[in-house]
Length: 124
Image 1 (tube, one colour):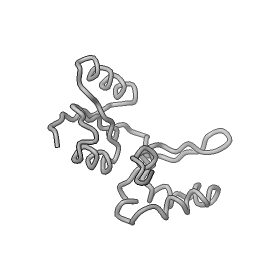
Image 2: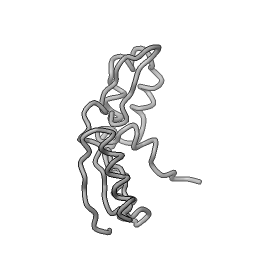
Image 3: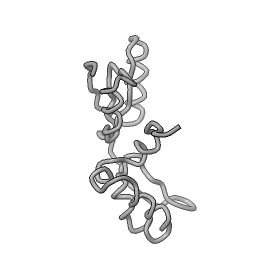
Image 4: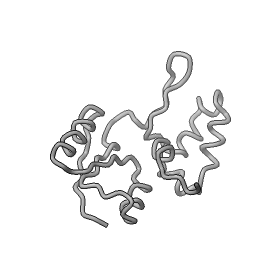
């Protein structure tokens, strides 16, 4: 695996600024939430980031909140937290059931919603 630098984003705007700055410097940037799939991709050299931008340092991206006409789900919500959230269980039972059925309990405890949406396909 190639060496890379780590950058902790303060907020979403800062994360974008870090990515733009890396690109401007001729470096490749990747975003990490939980990072479990990202590290596997880097180990296999499918991606070769020069800098990994940590999104876990951004407050509020791990929440489920009520919004007009529904709910807002932060991308850093773990699958386990999503499956156990009272609003999701009560009003979006299929989503709660799906989140609780993905992978193993160990992966659901660290795997984020955004990470699972963005992970590479395992079958073609």
